[in-house]
Image (cartoon, rainbow, N blue to C red):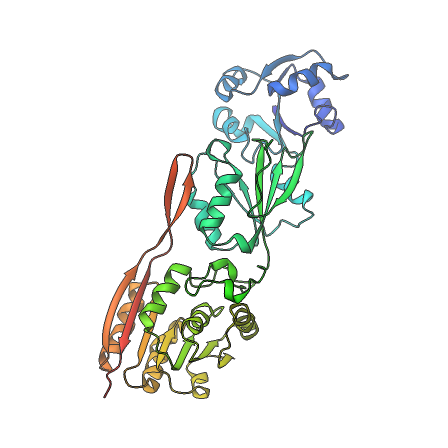
Length: 412
């Protein structure tokens, strides 16, 4: 067997006794060049043949005809380590793995943070759009294995900023984990990077409650996604900034009147509507438990006051609301046709209903309802991209496309 042993910075002296015994007995030892001096100076060194493992293709050639051997690797050899290449080149049946803590484990241990629910992503030689997409899901904790050749932590910061989520995450920079000179620090969005930044680093993003900004400092339209409080169990479930702006335009908000926001989520669209038209009465309806408290908290952050925030199911809860001039339907699920019919029964003359949709099947279901009720119908599709930094420029990372179904009632 070839024993593949994970190590930390103190190897070989820091290895468990049984792993040290494997090392003493091996006629051939493969290790990174940085470990060679420590191996040959170690009291237990047996004088075995010592080869470098830094070039995997050359290492595989030297191990092909070898019987017993030890390969030393950093951390867990099967987590972005040499283990995959060894399996491909030598076969799993010849290998036995002995992992040490990987960089992900070390990072969360330094932060004293449970990581069973953490997500991770590697940017080594990979399109940064994958990180942009992962951020839209708003994971509670996300470890990013950076690619120093493409900017490392700088690339992560730029993607976080482009996603509008700087306020929603604390960024922790972890350098040389497990090695002498290890450093772990939280970087504020405006803080400069360390002048002596080590290429051997990873980033951990931890979700935080965004600090409230003075309402008068917020933009009138298109507030950053990260400024809103989120549902803890569904943190990515909100309308993105680009779509929010378009939906507000489609509503053609009047200076006064009644706006229904049905399936309000975190309240983002209706609350921004109040910033544009303070004379509106906003009635927000969301069936998710705890949503009323969350929407009211977001309203306070934005400096607006809804006329009512209700936890309940539509269409049953609509009886509590005054007749609307404008309606946004963001929910409804399988009952959306019944919900739309109930809305149309109450919609005032010249009123507008706007429905963002994710599928063409939903469009095919709801369009005939609007047309059958005599509304003027329009349909549009919107696709937004956000810039993701590359080493030599910017790549556009797509957000999910959205169909918008709009109907306007006659004035008679």
